[in-house]
Structure formats: C-alpha cells, structure tokens
Image (tube, rainbow, N blue to C red):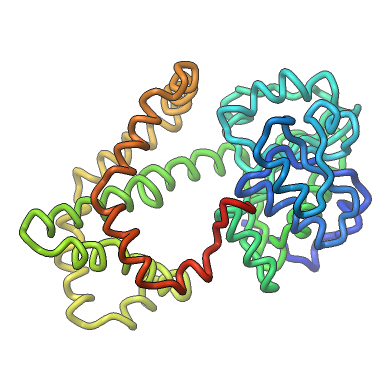
Length: 339
C-alpha cells in the first residue's frame, strides 16, 4: 500500500489550476474552503441558481457559477453532489462543456465504477476521497491537522493525473494525515460495505435495539439513551485514538470481560453471513441498481424510512438530554445555516 504525505506533493500544480467544486454540501464546502486557504486562488462553486448553497458560498466570499458555465471555465472539476445526481449533471452540463484535456474528479467511486458516468476520452478521471465527513475535513484542516484520503486514477489522459490528484489531496489537508493509493473499485465497494454493515447501518440498528431492549424491560428512556447511544462517541473516540486495545485499557475490567463473552452473542455467524450477502449485493451492482430505481420514483421508500427514524423515541429523548449539555452545541461540527 502506497501512502503519500505533504512532502510528496507539489501544491503548485493545483494552485495553477482553475478549480470548480460542484455542490456546496458537507464535502463541497470543506473542499472549497480548504483549497482557498491552501492558496488556490481560482476556486469557484458550481451550483444551480435555486440552490440553498448559493448564499452559503457567497457568505464565504466564494465565486458562484452555474454548472455549465463553470465547466467551460475550469481546468479541474470536482463532483461533490449526491451520488444519485451525478450522472444527470455530467451528461447534461459537463460532457459538452468541459475544456479539452480538463480533469474530472470524484470523492467516491460509485458513478465511475458502476458505469453510470462514461467520461469523454480526453478527460483525466481521478478521485480524492477523504475518509471522514466533510465537516470533519474542514474542522481538522482548521486546527492544523487533516483527514486521511484515498487517491485513485481511472484515466490518465494527460500523463499528469496522478501528480495533480495528489496535489489536490494535499491542498484539502489529506497530506497531513496520509493519502493512500487505491482503485475506484476498491474504494467504492469497501466504502459502501462499511457504511451499510458497520458505520451507519450496523451501528444505528445496534444502538436502537439496545435502547428498545432496555426501555422494553422497564428502564428509564434517559438511562437507555445514555448507555446505548450517548456513550458510543466516548468509546469510539478511544478506539480512534489508539485502537481497540486502547479502549479496553480505558474501560473497566468488567466492561472488557463483558465485551468478550457477550459481543459474539450479538455479532454471530448469522450476522457474518448477512454481512457477506450485503457485500455480494454491492459487488454485483444490485444495491446501486436498487438505489437508482428508488430515485426514479422520487425516493418514496427512502423518505418513508427517514421519517420513521426521525419519529423514533430515542431521537426525542436525545434532543432533550442534549439541551442539558450546551457544550455539545458550542462545539458542533455541523451548522446547517453555514455548511
């Protein structure tokens, strides 16, 4: 595995380019602001006129262009809109308008790996994928640190795609933590699997199940929330800092013993078999096909599931408890009015 750092990157490569960031959501705002603060003078945000991001970007004094206009202007275009929108954006506004020999970049491999986008043959196609949410990419950069990034080159039409991609990654802070070389396939399939089975799907369902088990047994909802949801961050922070052994060093012997004897009862062979099925659905393209079909029917099921989660009793209990801890809001990574 090849890992690059700031010393391996030439920031002047990206500083000499006109860079358009398509989208101004979690990742979009972080990339645009980090590039600007790294000395990239020609950074613009590409948005629809009706986008809520226009005002947010203008508040940061970032130039805003419509997407087709930005495509004609930019040397580098970074696609940071939701996956389900990217193919229509490329086909409708980028394909005919991007400069000859320009670079098209992604922060996730889905649309390229599953052939939802087929870029023009003259374009460099590469990826810088921060391994963290955009708000963390920005906050870590601001404190002088960085979030590790993955680098991949799908097409090197210019002969310079790798070095330019590395320069971009360093400019958003990735070179401070490490930029790891991979492929679009590996990034895409491992990312989808991690999100679905562990980081989002697995963890959320585990927390909800723990909360429901305690409340169903007659314990106070507030106690259930603290024990099964709130403290998750405290445990994960210890693992982030020094691995699982570091977490076990910090918790009690009772907690560690419980981990060994009870953890395998929750995550067992049946769970692992289901994880393998999830990975099979990702590798075969079934998950992406289903997700794209969901978008063709206006995300009906997706929005219903989102609404069901929002109505879960744990969300109301958590909101009430967080009001008792104002320091959480004071140090919040997400400010929806700004980013």
